[in-house]
Image 1: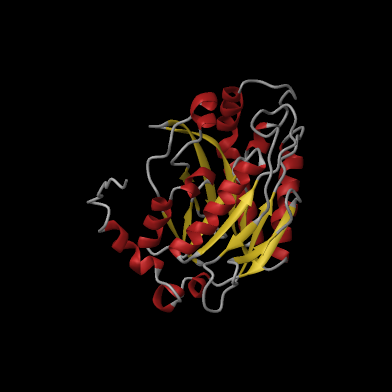
Image 2: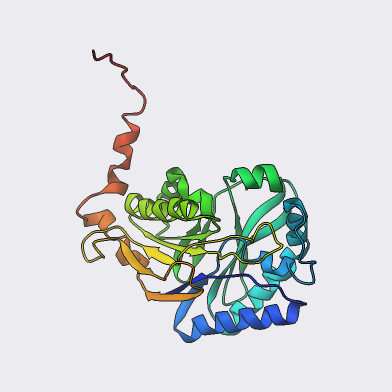
Length: 294
């Protein structure tokens, strides 16, 4: 199947109409390219919070509040476009209100037949904890789709291998990573974490970064990255583990052909058996010897 992952730069708009037209064009383009799944980045949904907002520099919590006010409408709009074009769309993420947690960073997954669900970010960055004052999500989810069982790790979540491991234990072959990183060091951490998760979990990992440049919005004033998809380097797969990638800081879709089940096939007969052998490291964690060498 074909998957489209984006490097996407949110823009200022006067109202909802130009934003909907823009997303219609983007999602329509992915569908026209044959994609059955299109992936937008972390905080791509903040674009809806820019509508009619003063192009000043309010506190991060003010942008959090603006995102939460429009989250339901943004999700509904992307959901309608997913139905219109007949593909799955990960709408990216934005802050939303949760009845129990308060404010969360929520990524919406929209189905071609109107299904709508979400994954909340589980492990927050210092900026999200201290400046935005949002709360972590309560649970890790798996999504059964016509494309197979899918998991979502939002940006920083991808840097924690046990989260990906748990998804794989539940039968996930495809993990989506919408990301937002201000500087090259942050992009390197997420990109290298995605590549490591592909090796450890022997599955397809797809990353979509948000690009900055929305001056006056503290959350989107910077942003760097390159859209990419990674596999374990094993039989019949790229030796560098890179299925596809775009250029750094170049906006647009990267559309590629991939079979998550085939990419996960090394679990049963690859050069190495990371998934099968993972419990062997667990067995060695209970007792750690500390030895003095002089």
